[in-house]
Image 1 (tube, rainbow over the protein chains, first blue to last red):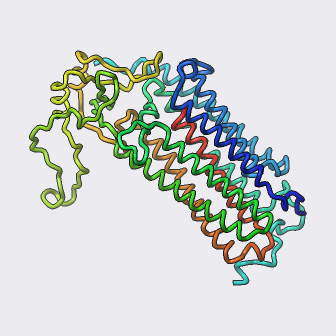
Image 2 (image 1 turned 90 degrees about the vertical axis):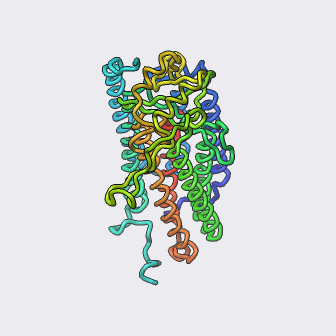
Image 3 (image 1 turned 60 degrees about the horizontal axis):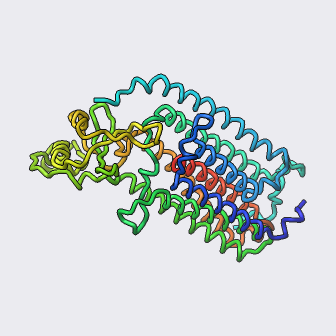
Length: 117
Length: 326
């Protein structure tokens, strides 16, 4: 019943994951403060390149938290898929629709907003 | 005591036999599915935030200009540093939680107790930090003027940096005093008046020739708020309705009120999760101390509450990205 690895300590792995998360957060904060024009003003799939980088780094962090802190890596594949795939599919679906809709509303209503007095 | 501790159950199996669906115990699996549903709830909120943000993409407040405070650095422009600190606190309390789970696997009661305690302390520090963040947001930093149509006008100096209302507003003698219950209508309350009236701000603006205004509109080429030249500024200010200091659910000196609404709602909902997480951690902490899990033979309960705690951290990672970075 009990897994063999349950009795060996994972402390080393935990600190390694903490290191990775810290480095990623630090990189995010530095980029967020500097906002280099080359990244911030370049457009890519509807937003700036910088935002895409933030999104990717966030997903990497989410992966490390889920897999190694929440021990998703040790769960059965069936449980892993039931949780992770459900979340990803629904979230991507909802976010895609709402963001496209938001840009559309902006396209229609944006020009009607009065900014000159 | 015996009944509540339930030492005789083999808590890792479902009550109806030995085959465990998806290879997880009942409690752990249900925790996973609760987390899934909660994750979808948070996604709904953040996606709604995304919808509104894309709807007003040309005039949304810039987070770097909103969250600029750091403890003991009064008046220093420190964007992001404080929230980065909060993120590290939460990640670190996640680490101590996973260390507690790890110690639980080795049945090391002393270590579990120690790491649970650190986790609780981390959670409390995070909650305090969030309260401080809210305080700064509610109190505001510069003050602004709201126009009749709800738009926010902020004041900048000749370098284009934002300046506070009190640095230029001209105090005029005003008859208007705050309505209080004891010398007015006893059933009508009035919130504190803004420190300046619209007139005082406009007079101060006229008296200081080197300041001008900026609108919420973001220049798409530079991604900065548009500064209006001084000769056109009075046309805006003649439409002024109210002086705004700080942010609340009705008005927000940094720009769109929706930004404040979503900020309060989403970080508040997350903070509520942290709060309940701390409570549950405290309960489990005392259970560890009195030896409940020692007698039960396994520390799976620590693992389950750990799942919830890591989830709270996971949500924060996304809140951090969408409110402060993107």
